[in-house]
Length: 236
Length: 288
Image (tube, rainbow over all chains, first blue to last red; front, side):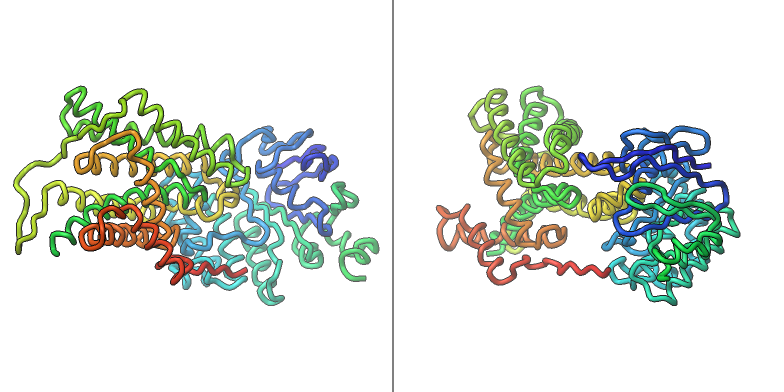
């Protein structure tokens, strides 16, 4: 469904992605793991159209999207939930969710239906519906960021470090929801994580990114048992 | 006394409009537009071209001016903001000052240096109670401010586009990322901001005369009012505007009218000493 083909991305003279290729199939959870500065966030930003590759191809549902605008990419079904949540601090929970519909037609009824779906998934958000974004806890902000990403009705959800800065019990809850969503709706998920143990547990396949190159790839459960992974990312 | 209050509030309403226009742009792109006063002047002269030079009905001239100013706002965005996006903000701010000078001189070439008058869109006998006279133009000024405040509130909080505009203002990068057409939200902010200045110009021209250099002090007062109200805070700007109108009117009557333009800055300095974030400045708290 998503095909990343030999993508190179540079910031000025520094090449951050040195020709990476991978795919995400329909209904699949794929994990992209790797340390700080490996290029994980750059990969997601390139797919969502915020950055342009210097070479390589991106194809999505059979069409090339490496020159498509961010709005059009969101509208075509790729949704990006950014690192650090980045919810709008001065907007209420409801308004934050509405911003996720920006790339869709303004159909009030459909938007209300989707709000209901998000509130079913994260009942906590409904309790906080009128609260401003900044007043939410870290876990609630993460739920809100995922909810906002879902409001564009994606078929691929890209999650950047959803566990960052959250308590273990909250991480557990967030991942449970992601898996539930994937099972129930067939939503494909591209998951970027430093918390590799968690990521490999929920993903079907995984890729390891090291300084702009994919060094390992395969079935997530197999990778979790790989000694190289265990040593570098799973703490021995 | 009562008369001074009415006159002060009418003048203050105009300052409030200039400040609202300034903040519409500032809140969206974090750029203080120092050509806001020159946009006001442009609005006044477009109104005069329509209503006086071409003898159009004044209401039609208002509509034309508002549409023209919205367009001017978009041109302004294309010329000043887009080419300098991502550069240090002071560059953009300097460019707005330069634009102000260009607009002032263009007006001088097109309309000449002589002051011109624009008729008020409303006529009729002034209201009187308890010895206070309220002209129809003053009533119209208050009503215009009230309608604009209401419209702005409804646009920003009750429509999806307004929510997207607020999101753009709060975090441009994330706004792009979630798929908000930020070019469009920013363009509307510039169009609306310029239009508000133009309306202020149409309201000022019947009271004082319009001349190409009228924008400088009015634009600065819009800025002062925004600072007093806690930069970025819309209700604060309106209250700050009315407050400054009152101070100037009372100051001119009881202290000296020679210092009329100085009161604004004395008040601003006083407010900043007492409340460094302005009277209604919010403490911005963010939780990570």
